[in-house]
Length: 191
Length: 193
Image (cartoon, rainbow over all chains, first blue to last red; front, side):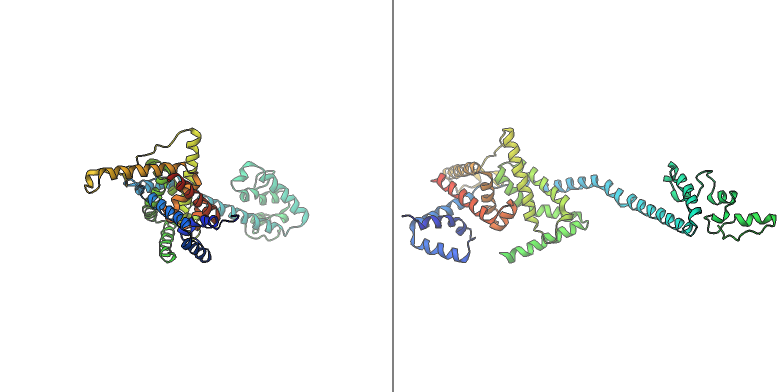
């Protein structure tokens, strides 16, 4: 016989026994088994094999296995805790500090933005000279307010140079202090 | 069957959710619930209690680390079995490459305890011997099967997993699972004749 239908059924017997065939295939196999003693015998052998395998003894967890695993998991957690603490506090704190510094730099530069090009460039040059110093890592905004050439406060530097008009201070007291000689100076906002 | 499994799956999911919220006891409950079947499954593959428990512990610790990333509705038992399956296969490969064989424990035990014929006076010693002999033969035939066939058969016969679950655990297709089981059973039936 060229085509043996039993070969096709034999391949499906395992899935038939496990109840994993589609309804159509299940009906096909059942119909064949009803008329084929050889295939029915194969199915009995598969079922007997399943039953024999089920007799093999298994194993249960040893006492306190769950407790042992939980303890190991807690030990794992303890190793991760310092890293989590680091990520939970210092990192956000540094982010807030950075944001604060950036905000200050923004408002500071916004104040001097209203100045004319020439004085602004001069001022920027002095600020950069201050910012390149290593100490600027601590508080770049505070240090940027110092003159890069003399390390005095920018406002003082400008007034001593006779350039009080380009003083970056919003409310500078320098002009008011120099009124003692009676000379009229430009009213300055309080620094 | 699916109606019975749905509450089980929900319970597992609730435990996982509680664990992710910081309830450490939930993890202990997960371990208590799944360690029995898992160690049983691993024991049938490795035939070694100590090795089975080591693999099971490692599987639970990996689940512990991965728990925050698991999607809601993930089937916990399938995930644990998948982890354990991969660990067991890796361990078997390492043992094979080292040329060592896992110490196979006696098959005359049931539930880890040595069976004493005196405990069951109604069973003839001959019957006990024959049963033990039969079990040894079947266990030996099982260990001779290729790993994938053996694992598929264990998951089907002892764990009662569906073909779809076996395919997920073994990371293979349904048709592969069907083929693995067919070939495994054919091989064993031929040897038993």
